[in-house]
Length: 248
Ligand code: BTN
Image (cartoon, rainbow, N blue to C red; front, side, top):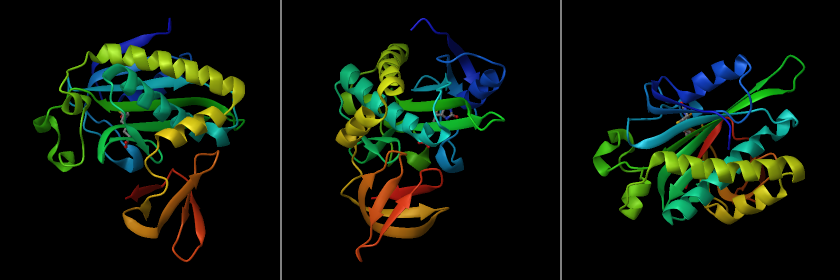
């Protein structure tokens, strides 16, 4: 609120523009939004299809004064804020697939790509939190590669939404959570993340670079955002969310 929101018709990726601006000293809270991304980026080096007119593609510049090891909490906080925005705005209750995929049912409706940069002292210089939300996609708007696994707010509610209003609603909810998180810590975020998640208790396959490396039941998350999976033989393993993906 009161912070700059910069809108572009098209960008390569809002995360890239936001990082360039952050490097030049742009302040915390600035949002970079594009109607269209030529090279939208997803997690794990994937591409994120970002056609014009259909979704919300934006990045937030943040400069939290916290230990870098807690940076991942920010992604969980963002996922929580997105679930609440969609719930309030569209009356649609999505769930979070660890670490930060937004699903409705089994289909993906949004995703988050956070990128943290440290200064030469090893402290957080800035974090770019990039958010992609499928707002007004119809079935045929999706790229073939994701047509069966993706959905949109429109497809689930039958209503088209004004994307800038969704963004403003998100900004308000996110800011409230962000302030609370800085003041009081991770506990309330963790509680809500747990309430909204649809990962824990499920059988999951953990993949690294496309290869299955572990199978078991998703058991819990730790305060650094990592996931604990318990195999059938009782062994537990912890996964950091930088490198891996899971499948139900
Ligand atoms: C994922 O689920 O893999 C994360 C997707 C993140 C996409 C958003 S769209 C706005 C921002 N800019 C990018 O290039 N990516 C993020």
